[in-house]
Amino acid sequence: METTSDLDDIARYADHALAGLPEPFNELCEDILLEVTDWPPDEVLADLDIDDPCDLTGLYEGIPLTEKSSAHPTPFPDRIWLYAEPILAEWRDRKSVTLQDLVAHIVVHEVAHHFGWSDAEIAQIDRWWE
Image (tube, rainbow, N blue to C red):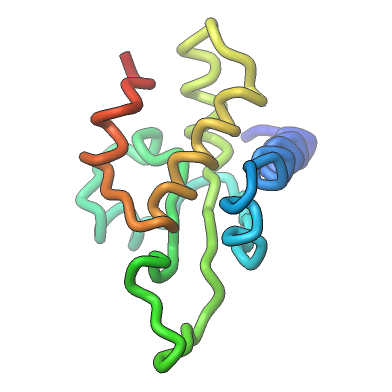
């Protein structure tokens, strides 16, 4: 298990990445909550059909802006979940990127979901895993 300082570092890097988004994106993301925890919950992994918990570093939980309506208020705030252990495992495996850059990349990926982008659409312009 990693230390609390790892969770704190990841949370700090995530906050910095979210706050550093250019306008108008920054303003459209100010109500997103960032949550950092060690591992994705088993029920999340099962829902996403993911066998290896290290395969999930982040998750957007909410209603994308493209689907929101003022006539139907969102019952819960949008959240970006960051999973520290998978993030740290990927960071150790890559060896070519800083932890701060990796966290920022994951945050931006999850923010793209907030704006209605699918994983396939994100992958067309972001070949990060290569």
